[in-house]
Length: 436
Image (cartoon, rainbow, N blue to C red):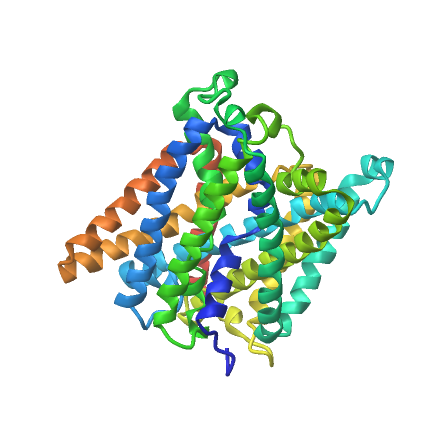
């Protein structure tokens, strides 16, 4: 935005915030619920190859197409035209909206663990109402913050990154000290789960992929970078750091608490474990850290969510109304429409009591697979033209990784993803017909 360009440090923090969301605070329980230690090792090998390959692809594309600012949307459009560009932008936008809804769903229960605002009986009787009210207040508070522009959010990025890492560092410290290899190797292959190793891996990969949605963060807002070369550096630095952090946290968790017990811990599991480990005063630190982490993660995802429709509208792919800005250079119609969609979805979710955030994040992961496939295909197409064998190889690794993820998906989630894309395609047809 005008006169508010981001340097390498701030851009790296932004990408870290894009990736390091509140999902990590539920990671130990999510993993223990579906995967044994052995399956987790294989899952992380596959995921590391896939995520690093995706990251390299995005960095390469930022060099091959330095004039493109819209990340996965603009690369897909450049490679295969407006229709594919729209589907990519639509998929990314819907995935971001669903991700933000999942953040809001876990926000209330997480807040109750950190600070006992209401009595237990009150929560039991009117939990859906309380949850909806608190989530809505949080939604529109972040809305107002964004309307004030990037200057405010940069300060929050810096403070919240520290606050977000603080409980994770404390968690790693305590759990490394208490690591017990006997606990780690107990039920190493997940025999007690009575689930085949392949199925354990399949149940885990999409959850882990969702934790990395946001690696394209620096590319998406590359307009705000002081120098184009910062985009690749920021993305690589952030991804390698976060990848290492996730791996350490998952393995030390199942080396402290048996997998079966860890799977039963209330989410966010890291917060629950830490509160029990460091007592009353630690609870105060964790509470404020988690609140900052929540605000930061949601804020970053919301900025990414409104940026893609804005950029697509500049290319006349989304309706032009999405390109209108306020005095703080914020695409405010994009923000209002996105938040009204989130609010309406949140209302429906609470009415029908479909509050399982892990299912929502799985849907978000599957929806964003299509934009990622388009990006990888664009890299392959460009690499063939430039006769760059190595980058062709990187592109095909991506495609194989995404095919594996689709194979690992459940049919119901694939069907829901198909329906959402079908709706998008219909809206694109209406937009073209009536020149919106």
